[in-house]
Amino acid sequence: MSNLYQLFQACFEEHGAKVLLETERRAYTGAELDAAVAAYAAALAGLGLRAGERLAAQVEKSAENLLLYLACLRLGAVSLPLNTAYQPAEVAYFLGDAQPRILAAAPERRAALEAVAKQAGVRLVTLGAAGEGELAGLAAEAAARPHTAIAGRDDGDLAVICYTSGTTGRSKGAMITHGNLASNARTLVELWGFSADDTLLHALPLYHIHGLFVALHCAFLSGARTVLQARFAPAAVLERLPQCSVMMGVPTFYTRLLAEPALDAARCRNTRLFISGSAPLLADTFKAFEARTGKRILERYGMTETGMISSNPLHGERRAGTVGLPLPGVAVRITGEDGDPLPAGAAGMIELRGPNVFKGYWQMPEKTAAEFRAGGWFVTGDIGVRDTDGYLRIVGRAKDLIISGGLNIYPKEIEEVLDAQAGVLESAVFGLAHPDFGEAVAAAVIAQPGARLAEEDLLAGLRGELAGFKLPKKIWFLDELPRNAMSKVQKAVLRERYKDAFGGG
Ligand code: AMP
Image 1 (cartoon, rainbow, N blue to C red):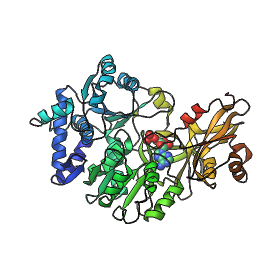
Image 2 (cartoon, protein in one colour):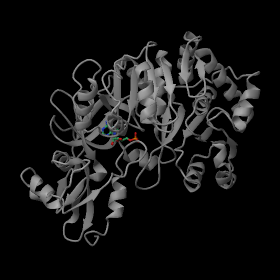
Image 3 (tube, rainbow, N blue to C red):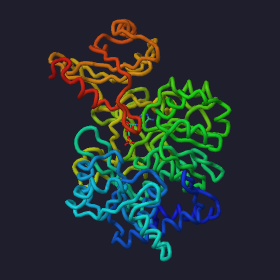
Image 4 (spheres, helix red, strand yellow):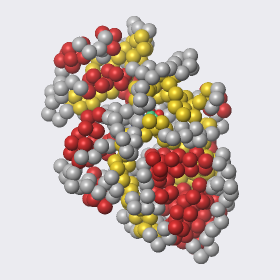
C-alpha cells in the first residue's frame, strides 16, 4: 500500500504545530492541513467520488485548490488539473475524454460551464479562491465528520491525469501514478537538499507539474513552509524573498525580476536556491542574475510525462546553457534516427527510463506505444547532446527541426548566434513552407530596449558563423515572443502567423 498522501500525512503529523502553508488569506499548520484535507475528502465522498474515479478541477490558484488535489489523493481518486485559461469548448473535450464524475470550477465560470458539464453527464460544483462556492461549503459542513481514512493504492495506480498543452493535434492525458510522483519527489528532496528549515516561495500555477508536483511535493515531503502567492507578481516576490530560502520559477520569472531595480544581493541573501525550468533559461539571464545577486540559478529539465529528468547540481558546477546531469535512478540516452544510442557530443533524441516515467496516454494505446521503444525507453521528443562529462544540453524539439533543401537544421543553433548579435535580446527560429526548399528558415527577433536592428546587419553578422543554408530567409522584428503561461515560446503560433510568407508549400 503506497498512497502518496501517506507520505505527506506523515510529514503533516511530524510538523503538526508548524505553519506549512501560507496564503494571502490564511496559514495552515501541518495538523490543520491534514484536517482540511479530510474535510474536503468527506465532502467529495459525499458527492459520490470513489477511488479510481476522476475529478476535473478548473479552479484559481489557492489553498482550496490544493486541498482539493490532496483530498483526491486521500480518496484514491484521480485529479485532472485544468489550466484556468481553457475555454468551455476545450473543457468539454477534457470532460468527454476523461469522463470525470465531478468538475470543480471557479464560481464565476459556472454559467459558462453548465452546458458542457450537463452534456458530458458530469456533476458541476463551484470552488472559489477566496474559500467560497458550494464545495467549500460542503467541506466546512463535513469538518465535523472528516474522512480520515487514506485509500490503499499501489505504486502503479493513477494519481493524476495531466493534459499536455499539445500545440499540434488533440491534447493527450498523461497518466501519472502514485509511484511516479513519490519517486520523483523523494529524489528531488535529497538532490536539492530540502529540509524543514526551508521556506519555499511559490508563484507558479497549480495546473502544471512544475508548481503542483516539483515545488509542492518537495515541501510536503520535507516539512518546508510554502508561501503560496496567487500569481507571479515581481513586486510581491521581491517583498517576500528575504524570508524565503528557495524559489522555483520559469525563465520569464527571472527576466522579469531582473527588470526590477529592487532585485539585488541584499534581497536574495537568505535565498539559498533559485531553480528554473519548463523552458530554456538563456545563458545571458543566468549571467545577469549572478552578476546582480551573486546567485547561480540551478536549471533542471523535465516534462509532464516524466516529471524531472535532469538537474544541475546543488553542490558542484551549475553550467549555464545545460540542464545538468540525469537524476539518480533515471537512465538517459541519446539516440540517432535508427534508434541506436549515440556517443557523447552527438545530437539526437533524448530518451529515458526510470520510476518517474508515466504509465501512458489516457485511452490512447497507439500514441503511447509510438512514444516508447523496446526496453521501456520513453522518447521525449527533445533533441539533446551529452557532453563527455555527462551534462545534458537541449538543442530543440524534434518537431521544430527544420528540413530545408533536404538538410536538417536545429533552430537552437541559429538562435544562439542571433542572440549573441549586438542589440538582440532574444529570438525564435522556425520553419515555414517554401515551394523550392520544402521548408525555409525564418526568425522572429526581439531587440534590446533602445536598440535599432536591421535585417541586413543581422544577416551580415550571421554570415561569418553559420553555413549559408542556415541563414534565415526572412526576419521579423517583434515586441515580444508569443509564450504560454509556462514561459514556453509558441513556435506553432509563429508558424501559423507567417505561413504564407514564402507562398506556402
Ligand atoms: P511540459 O510537459 O509542459 O512540462 O513541457 C515539457 C517540455 O518543456 C520538455 O519536453 C522540454 O521541451 C521543455 N523543457 C522543460 N524544461 C526545460 C529546460 N530546462 N530547458 C529547455 N527546455 C525545457
